[in-house]
Length: 502
Image (cartoon, rainbow, N blue to C red; front, side):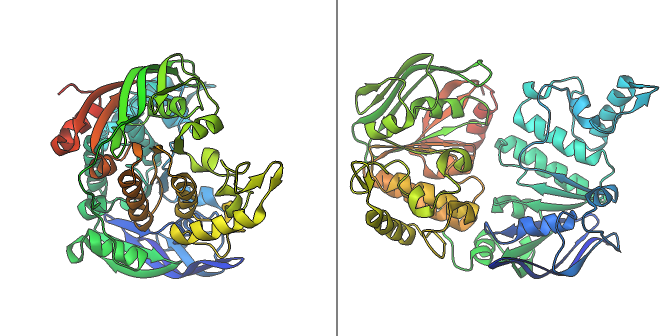
């Protein structure tokens, strides 16, 4: 095998932190290399350097044996490096073909040669076993098909090295299996693949080699034959990690949240929640499983006072809550871990301490009338930083200074520390590393055991299966099934998530 990518002794420093510390790795033609690491381990910095977006303080990066020119991203791409981003870079109102040729359109005179473009896309999809309809509009496609379009968009450039950043984050189990098969076929055809993922079973299934970063340093290189998921987790976080959630039988109590006939429209004014009924009991976790885009976001926002309800009722501990503002919903008894921590969970230019009282800043003991009690704010921050293992030099640093996993811990700490009767947790572990996932899962179980009713909404089926006492499957804006976790079959739920009856 020949080396497509050679990273030698790369070091990159920022004020107060060494993001990459003498990192070296290679990726050969025809192999799949999994790049693992905690949030803040240095993966993103390394990839930015590979693409020429940043210049390391020392070290060298070669593609195909030739050093790259830092700052020349177009040159890196022209040498056969492609990337599929976690968040799709597609234009929703355009067709598959239009997205794939965007910026590099085949021309006939002054006009785009639509026929040639369509024929090229069909040939490309057949070549890589990624069948797509070139005439389909992106916004009408399921998420798994959009992922195919993203990959084809990169492969159209005759890619030799393909970097996949969390490519399975929003896919059903069946779509994940298909994608892993595509990755294997790409490697067989000679393409080198770098896979970035937090899902260790995917690494074990498809990787030829595994490279682990921790604290900016390369701490080990191994293969799936030489280790297991527990071993990989320990390499990532530097300690033993319990990957299986330990939970006792739920002690289900009174109803704390009831949703009746809820109908909600999305941002495009299209009805996305179509008559949903749900009942959540004290002392249980009710998991809502579904592929993103099937109404889960709108359901959560309607419950938590962030979106208008067209029809239906939401009752908190038996009391009907009309279209309240989020602050009022919180006072009525609902804690909310939002799916977008950056947009709805934190104020980036506030301190960590202030973020930890964001929904109580005007309440005792943190305020008396118009006067804030800064001593109590500081005391609360000190306690929660320790209890929830928030990694920061000071609770008075800005929230923007934290890694993704620690930002999520701030949100979880704030919402769980008040012990309200209902906790709505939407995508609570998205984009966080295996150590933080373990911690957050344990906190959700602890909230349940302390008597809260937990509504867990997640696109991660493994998370739903391991945490939930009951599972509601959402597809097409409706609850299509509710099953006890004891009777839950992964493939059956995956099919329901994809909109299949059986």
